[in-house]
Every structure is written in structure tokens, then in C-alpha cells.
Length: 198
Image (cartoon, rainbow, N blue to C red; front, side, top):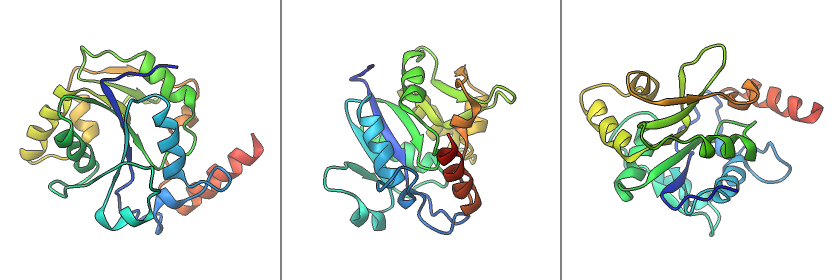
């Protein structure tokens, strides 16, 4: 097990899930536990502190033991949650994990943590066939978030484009399905079917 004091975990769960039409964090892929709680427990095994990034109206749905950071709402898109966390703990690197990645396992996180290069501004996964960085399953170093804030203040808010133009370390999962992103309800059903068959 790799436990790093300088890396905090962040579950990005504050999106409005408009395409899914229900809160993605409330979906259940693993028995009775919802995805938000499942990923929180997973990241807590690797990071000295883990938080859920959420909107204020979602706080009531969290468990008592789940620490959270309410999105500040200063910026649009997923960088809003990441930068909100950075503002609370500016000296920490963040192991960021989107709530809509149903096939993430301990091995996925362990590989990312073990391959971290703190000299680069981020260590990120990418698909083998399309090596574009996946910014929402990544380790963002403090310097990356300082640069990202300037980037977003200049009028851009795409974390993938930001990382693509920076000095980052890219790694690949053992199986590309680990990076499968469930945006629509049909994606949720597809993931559930795949899990039942495996």
C-alpha cells in the first residue's frame, strides 16, 4: 500500500449530472453502497486525507464520516472543484477521481500513485489508443493548480487542453475499460452488465 502524506484525495461529485438525469454519486455499482461512498473509501486507503468535492445542496446526502469541500462556484467545469480544494490546502498535491468512473479499482489507484512524478506538474492516465490526458483521474501537483487558475482566469476552462499543453507524465492502465466514463443512464446499465458478467 502506498500512503503519501503530501497527497490528498478528492472525489469530484459536484457536477449536476444533466446527461445522467440523476446524481452520479448516488448510483450503485457495488451492492448497497453508492459510487461516491465507494470511491471515498477507496481513496482513503491511499491518501492521508480524502474529501468529496460537492455542491452545497449535496452535503445533506453525505455520511457523517465523509469529509467534504463545497465547490466555491468561482469557475465553470471540473476545475471548479479541484481549485476549490486547492484553495483550502494549497501546499498539497491532489489525487483527483471523478465520481463517474465505475471500473476504477485499488490497482488503478496504486499504479497511479506508484508512477507519480512530482517533478512534472501532473501524473495522469490516458487511453492506449488515444494518449490524451484524462484529467479527472490524475495527480495534480500544487504548481499545476497554480497554473490552472491563471489558465482559467485567462478565459479557458478545459482541464484536458490545459494538461495537454504542459509538462506532464502520462501512464496507461492495464485495461482501458478502467477509464470508462458513465455519462448517460445507458452507460450505467452497460457498466452494471459488464460487472455482472466478469
